[in-house]
Length: 286
Ligand SMILES: [Zn+2]
Image (cartoon, rainbow, N blue to C red; front, side):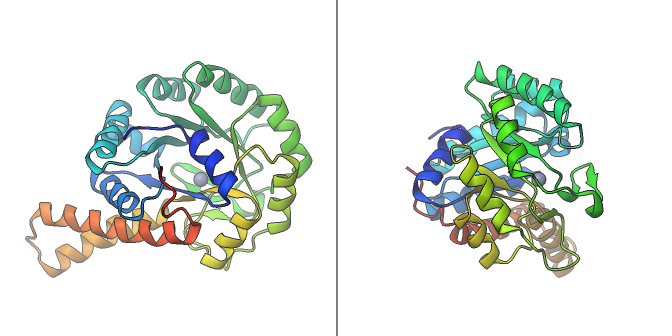
């Protein structure tokens, strides 16, 4: 059992028509819950460290925790750096052993996005590390990156083809109606756009960000259109961690922190298991 690359997991998902769940982690208990779910469901899983979470946990410790839980729980795991704009930080994380990274230069011009993404692809290739990039602009707030809903731009299919050719990126986050954080109104996902992009670049796994709050029916539809990785973060941060801690201390003001951590593990595992069932990855671990 070990850390594996995202490229490997997503290629298998493409062949067998499911998506690999990608979950943010900010603490050890949250990560252990994700690992517990992957083990119970025999599912591949992508553990995603956010930039701010990584700054708190430590770049090296983030990887080592994933290595440790993958051994303790007997599972394969991808350790991925989510939404990073900083070239030097990405290089350091690759050096430290992350098996996958996301360069998010989606707020830059097309040419600048191509330039920085290609440089990351070139660096990552030496280590066999997978690179995800974003084209178009996903609305909402992710970590410390905020995109006004009105300025969120959907990914243009023809531009996606050109971008993949210009950068040789391994997988692509598409903007097609999902947003980060909680939805103010029911999300309207442009499924036809996802399907068109998938048809044009069938070998490049597509990523759906902002999975929290999207109906399970819509998630399944997006997978049928070619989505191979579904990102869920807010659900863990708010329900898995914050609500659990609040509830435990509301029940018992001097609750033992060990018991609180155990509850976070259990509740994060419940959330992750439910999503694993939705995306169809249960039983897909080799
Ligand atoms: Zn995202």
